Amino acid sequence: MSGSKSATRNSNRPPEDGASPRGRYWRLVALSVASAAVFAVLFYLWGRELFPRAAGRWGKTFPFVGAVTLTLAVALFLSEWFGFAGREVRKVRLAARDFLFLCSLVLLLFFAAKAVIDLLAEVPTLGRGVPTRVYAYLIPLPAFAMVVRVLINSETSILFTVAASVLSAAAASGSWPALLFLLLSGTAGAARARRVPDRYRMLMAGVQTAPVCALAAAALEFSFHGGGGVLSAAIFGAVNGLLSGPIALAVMPVAESAFGYASDIRLMELSGTGHPLLSRLMKETPGTFHHSVVVGTLAEAGALAIGANPVLCRVAALYHDVGKLGKAQYYSENQAGAANVHDAMSPGLSCAVILSHVKEGVRIAGEYRLGDRITEIIAQHHGTSLLYCFLDKARPMIRDRKASEEMFRYPGPKPKTREAAIIMLSDAAEAAVRSLDHPAPEEVDETVTGIVNRVYLDGQLNECDLTLRDLHAVGRAISRVLAAVAHGRVDYPPSAV
Ligand SMILES: [Fe+2]
Ligand SMILES: [Fe+2]
Image (cartoon, rainbow, N blue to C red):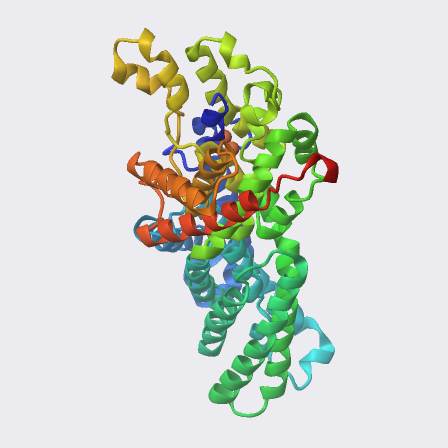
C-alpha cells in the first residue's frame, strides 16, 4: 500500500534460486530417486541383520531383494502418512520440499538409531551391567522433533514424531518400551521448542526435555523389565534430552541451506542492521527503511494480539519493500519535499514502476538468500490490490473500465498466511496514517478501521487463516501503536530546538 500511497501462486513457494517450476520439480524428483538409492544401499547393508529369518529362504539374493522391498515398503508408509496429512490436515499443507525433508529426517533417524545401538554394544565398559535394550533411550528423536517444529510447525512435528517412532523402534528390535519412549520423548521435545528465537532457548528446550525423558525411560524400563536397568535407563534418557538442543542446533543450519527454510534463529540474524541488504536499504532508501521499521513494529504488535509469529512479522516487514532499491525517487517516503516524479509521467508508466517493486523484491530476496518465509511475504504483501490513485488519474483517458482496472492491480498472490496478512494491513495502515497531519487517536482509529474494512471487502484476505475476530484484534493493535507514534510527534517552538 505504501507503493500506491507514494504516488501514491497459487505458487505458495516463490523461487528462491531462480529455477523454473518445471526445473524445481525435476530436481526434487532427482533428489528423491538419489535418496531412495542411498537408503536402499543402507537397507542392503543391514538387511540380513534386520530380517535374519528371511535370509534362509532367499539365500544369497536376500540382502538385495530385501533392501529393495523394504525401501518400497518404507516409501509407501511415508508417502501415505505424510501425503494424507498434507492433503487433509489444514495446518500441515506439505509442499514437495517439506515431504522430502521429513522423509529424509525419518530415515536418517532410523539409521542414527541403528548406529547408536550397534556402536554402544561394541563399547566394552558399557557392556557390563547395562542391558543392550537400554541404548534405545539414546535415540535422538527429541532433537529431530524440535527441528521439525522450529522449521515447519507443531502439527507437522507430531506427525513426524509418530512416523519416526514407528520406524526407529524397528532399530531397537521393535520393542514396546522403545516405541513408547520414542513417542513420548519426541512429543516432549517438540512441545518445549515453542518459541526459539536464539540458541540459548534451544539449549534450554533440551534441558527442560531431559527430566521428562529420564522419568519416561525409568518408568518404562521398570514396567517391562523390573529394576535391573532403571538407573542406566534414567541416565540415558536424561542424556538424550540434554543433547537434543545441541543436536538440533547442529542439524538446523544444514536443513536451512539444503531445503531453504528460515528458523526464528536465522530470522533474528537477518534482523540486525549489519546485514548487507538492510544497510543498503538504510543508505539508499532511508525513507523506505524507516517505513519498514514502523511496519515491523505494527506487525509485531498485530501478531502478538492473535498468537501469530511476531519474529517473522517484524523481520519480514523489514524486508517487504526491498524491491524499491534502485528506484527510491518513485516512492513518496523517499521524496522528502522534492518534486513528485510521477507528475511528469503517464499513469500507466507510473503504475508499471510501482507494481514492479514486488517482483524485484522477490528477485533481491533470492539473491541475498533470505529464505522462503520472507520471500513469500514479499510476494504477497500487496496481494492483488488496486493502485487507486493512478487509476483515478488515468480514468479520463480510458474507456473499458474493467479491463483497465486489471492493469492497475498488483499481480499477487494474495496473503496465504496470517503473518503475510498482518504485514499487508500494517503496511497499508502506516501509509494511510502517515498522510494525516497530526491526527488525533480517534482519527487514527477511524483510518485504520477503514483500511482493514477495505482490504477485507476487496477479498485480499480470502486465502489466509485470519478470522474476523483476529482481524479486529490486529486492527486494534495496529491503531493503538500508530496512535502512540502519531501522538508522540510534538511541535517544538523554533527557540526550543
Ligand atoms: Fe510498504
Ligand atoms: Fe510494497
